[in-house]
Image: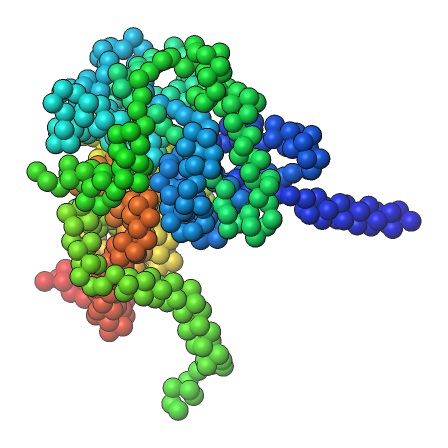
Length: 332
Length: 292
């Protein structure tokens, strides 16, 4: 009797599990440090979708380096949506025909629901008096940043410095490249990624200034204590975007387009925007930006489109083999 | 016919077939695919990629550091193996188990730990850097990481071979008048030399392909401390799968030639010492040398 009832319980469990699998499942393929944002966002959306469409939805997350992720999607990882930190990664999927060519127009704000900015982190009291990009190229300064050619974080830092140099009086591509050469000479190492750079700077106490995302600062504060460092906002820096897109090929096959669309749309809702702000990402919503003004000081920013004519073009000019980064090291 | 009659166990055909299929599936197929993929590029382009300034510098760093690490482990690994086989001391089992740990540890963890240790404020770095020697974020850091990762190869290849040399052989050499140095050089070393070379080759080839541990301690500066696997990753970050495979194929080709050379040396050594000359004879020769 007992055994029979146990078997029955197991069977019911199995049936229930199968039923649960039959519900809609979305896979969000995302970049490495997006965990916190989407960890909070997914339950919010599940609740919202239950109310709105009466449908239970399961959301799975996959996190790794942005470029690695899009390659996986191109090779067959069935992500319904991609949420990335570099536009050229989504561009790559568009070229492969997995994402609409005009993906950036499918959602507001160039399909980037929130932004961040590249800023400086310096030691407590700013002993070297770092104020702007020019200081980073000064003799005797040590700058920590992730590999400018291989990481999104490093690329954004590189392009920010380039754009600043370009906008100086008499600035040109030539002078910008010379400036970058000086700045990179001050880098004692290139960290393998954003978090590695943070550890090198904060824990191993190497370098005078760390260039990183504004949103990374809060994480450093949590990990190492607020009193250990200061933030410095340069006179001009890059507004970094976090573009999202629906993977057409996958949602058409799975029949999950409606849900995928709603999932990404909801990022622009008040709730979605507030969640971004709480994770120290600058919301697009002007009211919320005002509400969280203490956390997001005004800073003059540019976008890759403004200065470099798009992420893809910037990538080709600067980070492709033989691009400006390579030239700095191989043309002497 | 004659070769067949000497075998004690049957199943030559079956096991050879199995070996060939297994090796083909596991090794030849992926590597062959890689080489085929490179063929898309054309020879001229592969050469261009391989001879770029940064590629050449990375090859130098990768093979140089791997060689250095293998040489260091060839020496210290031999010492460790010798101590673990020949001496009894408390905690020997524990020390013996320690040797395998670099195998088990995820290499990224090893790299981060080593970088933390050897950084200017690390436990070791704070004593070494005042002496004017920087290890973390220099090519020396790469060598240190590779030594760590490849230590087990030399120790584990040598241990069984040293166990096989009976202490009586040393005693025989000594009683025939060989000095300690002669006993080592003429009796012990020839017997363990082929195994030492195997360990060396294993350590070297493992070091050439190592990425995870090196990347956190290398500093990754172009032309100075970039390893070839980093350049391969860099190509992948540019969606340039072909370029990445091309670099990998060139790296494999160099490794293959070097390994072939080491194997040749090993065959030569094995023929010269172990086959032609039993240990007892070697002991006699050593003593003859002593008498001279």
